[in-house]
Amino acid sequence: MDSFGALLPRLVTEVPGPGSRALASRLRRVESRNVTFLADDFPVFWEEARGANVRDADGNVFVDLTGAFGVALLGHGPPEVVDAVARQSRRLIHGMGDVHPPSAKVRLLEALVALLPWPDGRVILGTSGSEAVEAALKTARLASGRPGVVAFEGGYHGLTVGSLAVTARTTFRKPVLERLYPGVAHLPFPREEGVPGAADHNRPDAVLEALDHRLARGTDDGPVGTLIIEPIQARGGVRILPRDFGRALTERARAHGVVVVADEIYTGLGRCGAVLASPEVGLDPDVVCLGKVLGGGLPLSACVAPRRIMDAWPPSGGEALHTSTFLGHPLACAAGEAVLARVAGDLPERAEAVGAALMRGLTARLADAVAAERVDVRGRGLLVGVELLDEHGSGRPGAGVAAAQRLLERGFLALPAGDTGAVLELSPPAVLTSAQVDAAVDAVAEAVSGVGA
Ligand SMILES: Cc1ncc(COP(=O)(O)O)c(C=O)c1O
Image (cartoon, rainbow, N blue to C red; front, side):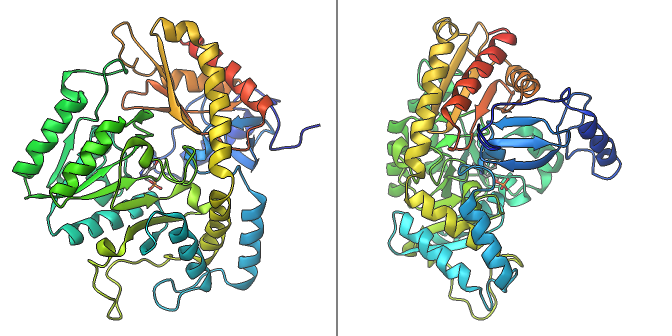
């Protein structure tokens, strides 16, 4: 019999059950109202998680197709991370990251640099993805000597004010629009002919023309020194950068002395079947941002660049110019070291294999809807998007949200993605069993057809 972690869904109450509902009404009284979406049928409150399973406050067992925002690629509570954190917690829970650093930080950074393309790589650690993005933007500003930034529509880089300036979605930006710094130009994310949402303005050659124009003219705050891009937009709707575009973009950036920052916070460290997703889409970045998978469930992120870029920062004269209280946190570093050992091992291949099985199942089960252009299924490794389309081939607003809700009611956790919520985003743990993959395929196909595809 399968144990918790490898189970299929087991619902013992309605979803959400009375336990989750009671927690929702307590939360409503103490949390700022914008943070957690609370409704009669949402959310479930988590009590326990292992492998690909989550148990909620009512004892319902779910299969997690989100990886909890893409973090749990090794599964929830991976034994090697649990052990590393337990060992570390008996010795040193908190250190002084940039003053008297924990030895765990050195081991983590050595493991990280050994995995990345730059033998002379240098790292700035952080605790969240947004922080890694901010470190990268500062680094690129220093290295290029120029203030302007090019980012892309649909891009998600975080919600702290510094990272929000490059995140594209208007709903996130609007409440603090006048606080966001100038000098950021958003270009359309290139869409090849035949993919959903393809239009004249986002044809790869049209976007390259817009990029040329930007590089020549600069931004409202001066010349462009930084370009930030996700090799695959994850929260933007699992939109994959066309490879020729990635190559052309890298070439143009090099020619203009622009620092290319690849935001691989979602895509990196095995998620898409390789240590980095950038090479696959033709990108050759100067700076890479990592997070999510890195901490194995603990908050940990990193901005990594070769020395030629990172040494734009002056040596520390005793006061770091970019640091924080929890930088190099010993528990997170110990967890990260355990994760990186797996990333250097079989994790990317495992993500590739499980992702291929998931993709095969979905394309077979949804073949009619795909042929009728009501659905588009795409992805790399274990980052998969199922987009629900209208009669014009554009994403159907809210359809991914509705499909995710149907999945929840059947015991599968999934998230919507894309600016209008037209995409169902799947980024499950690589420990999904084949029975869980098959059940997920059935459930996703049912949810997608249940919302009219
Ligand atoms: C590509 C990308 N960059 C940055 C972030 C922000 O990371 P965090 O939420 O940890 O600040 C995210 C989060 O989803 C992301 O997907």
